[in-house]
Image 1 (cartoon, rainbow, N blue to C red):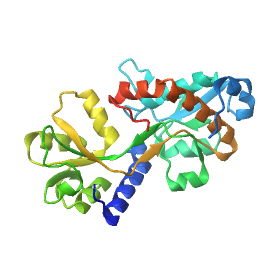
Image 2 (cartoon, rainbow, N blue to C red):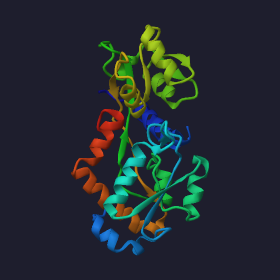
Image 3 (cartoon, rainbow, N blue to C red):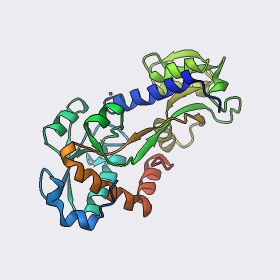
Image 4 (cartoon, rainbow, N blue to C red):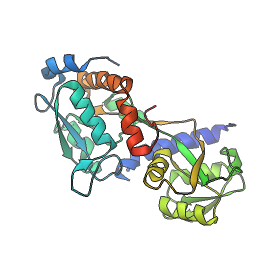
Length: 271
């Protein structure tokens, strides 16, 4: 796929901005047994318990089901990590705007809420390896073969929110913009043939396809640039990030991460 420097820069900016705003609609190899034996060395808020901050309002990552139970992809990944480390788990539901302040204040050990590894955050925090990787995706009506790359958007009509960074990427690709309020309206316009495509985060698309398997849309192309999400801790808990890394290594090797990813997205979004 041909890439211009401007297009690369825009794609990277779009993914970074999404990572900063999506949640607010903003290694080591320490094994589980070793971590359990030395849980005091992890500097946990409560010894023997992994205290995890999450929003609880960000479907399909962290939300409440019909029974009121806290569920979601990030929730189950965090539970699997705690189990691998031999720790109990306690979730601290926190609004996104206050979640990093709570981490800094030591109210919880880590955050599991699709926290992206932006350059700014990497300067101030320690991250585990990523357990989610997303890309920008061009979405078209099912069976449309006229668009197979970002270059093919030139002269086409793309449904984009005027405030979305994906709009900039669509314009950079040469598309004419049909203004919409959000993803749901973009899908509707694709279905009626009023637009040729829309660009959005690949996780949004996969979630929609998992919830609506008969939706007549498909991904035609994805950005080479990615956004990576992991567990985040403060620098004084670097040993915890290393222990989580070890747990994620095991969960990746035994297929648990892939299984959870396919449960929520119908695809492997872990790498």
